[in-house]
Image (cartoon, rainbow, N blue to C red; front, side, top):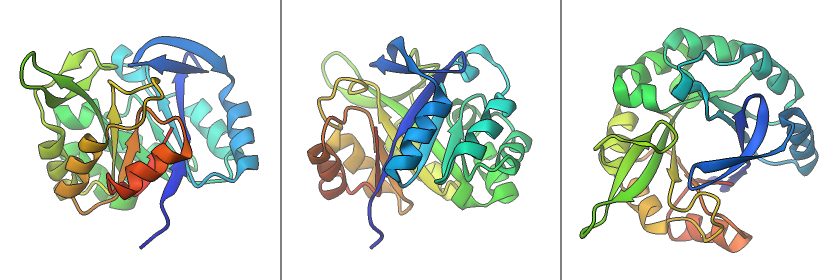
Length: 227
């Protein structure tokens, strides 16, 4: 079995880094290039950079910033945000990025997953699912888009299986309810997704300590943890 990976996740807004609480109230925390340099020194396994405004605004990925981040980064880099076409995926990979994450565009048109995988290989395609508990009486997990504001009616378990079958090489499961709370990962959510697929799953949302990392791996069967 491969050693579990620890993956910092940097959230971009207006070319700056922000921190959110349950996907709301973004607060500026610094410059992305400086953060990359810090994580280079920490020798982290990988790095994820997500532009949280690109998809909601319908804007193109910021290719210049992506190229600058890739040039600075000494570990595998995954970029997501505003990616809607296989051509964009291919272009981002050409800038020196190892993986591209897709989310709302994949939910709207799942065929994008297989098209992207055909262009750059499944190992470079990560599907992100932002998940929230919904329902007044019987709570259920539901994928949301548009920074958690738009419920899709889709089950993360069902869509995880579909994404994997279409060629996603990895899945990132992000708990909106736990995001920024430092109350630990939603282990039942992670567990449900990992049990439904054979591809690696990254757990995200709620980490505070190494104990949380360990729980996501040992109880949730995650292949990697992000924070």
